Image (cartoon, rainbow, N blue to C red; front, side, top):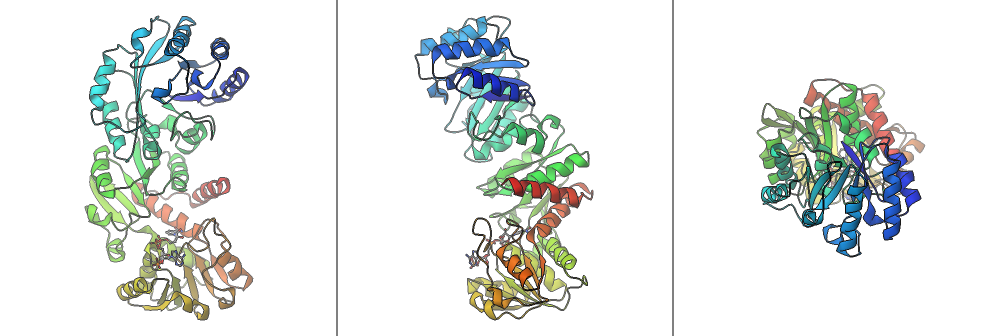
Length: 489
Ligand code: NAP
């Protein structure tokens, strides 16, 4: 179930927000601690309970448990008791306050524990202590400093004897708010809108329903995700989740902010994760942690895709084929062999593209800021290199930017002076935000053919989807989802 907390401060606003929340919410949480006056909180609670069309949880969280109620403990408990006397569907009572509450059959009691510092190792002991209070529902919410903290919560949910609400707060806990349903969690919380969150890391209800299709998640749902740091602005969840839905697959794709790739791979094998996209900074460091590596990916030395083949984690690189396909589509004659290519950059993207184009028989020159990196890559590829400053005199059929120069928000800069671009050249920018970079705008104005980074991005995602599922996704649907995501950023 989805619970939307109402964090408005006045009765009228609370009633209005409740009327909006019921669209997606199964339960509404009335946060009395967001209302500063005691009498206003009481009036609000009476009205909200009277006009409710969905079940209500009444919560009056004290500051010590991460809430806002600053009055006396006696007044705080008094409001909770009144909620029970008024027949609220659920009342959330902190584990250390339960002894002050008299119960009634009409109200279910959620006994809660919040930890804003970490996810304690002795979480099962805390669970057992809460069970001693005879709750109808147990609620344990902790803070994740590392993505592996979520695994402790998933295990707790899988073995919980009572209905249990449990997830981790914070960026690293994001996935537990989505996957809690897979592991048997009673409900998850989602904010009505951005800025109306009641706790750190809460997704909006719109995202939860429309991007992650939360209501379709169940025990059998296969889990996929993007591993990197940062990942919060990634377009991949939007494009893969809509493709899973379109193909009728019971799968969900989540953003995974990973700091330590070693512990991540070790712990996430335990939840039988089915596939991963890998992004900066883990594309190379994950290689030795996998069981098998595809031949092309091994040659490149970097992977962007992991497929779980019956417990064997195999790495692939779909950036390489995606870039070559994008270029071939962008060239009128679909033929890129034997052309001269200037690649700007010597990082992961440059590496994947250079290997792909070398295989096609292109004559490649690497231009890079750090010349040592250019030398190293050019030796591995078997191609030429130059200093980045020499790009002013570039004479090439195809020019490819594999640096972040020109990426949002620095959209007015370009790695190549406009004068160096000449008619008929093919100019490919791997950046996809913005879709038309300064480099591509200059290239268009100079009569060049242009290829944008979104084409490569969609191609690499489509290839990942094929590797994971054996099914061809709709590239048009993926493009539409990516464009929608880019337009709201
Ligand atoms: P990376 O491994 O970190 O490499 C970055 C490269 O850019 C390095 O060669 C670095 O040069 C150079 N660079 C960074 N800042 C620079 C600056 N201010 N001036 C000059 N050179 C600079 O990153 P990556 O994974 O290759 O990604 C590079 C770009 O490709 C990014 O914009 C990314 O968005 C894009 N990309 C797109 C796709 C797609 O699907 N469209 C996929 C992957 C990557 P030094 O060696 O001197 O540090």
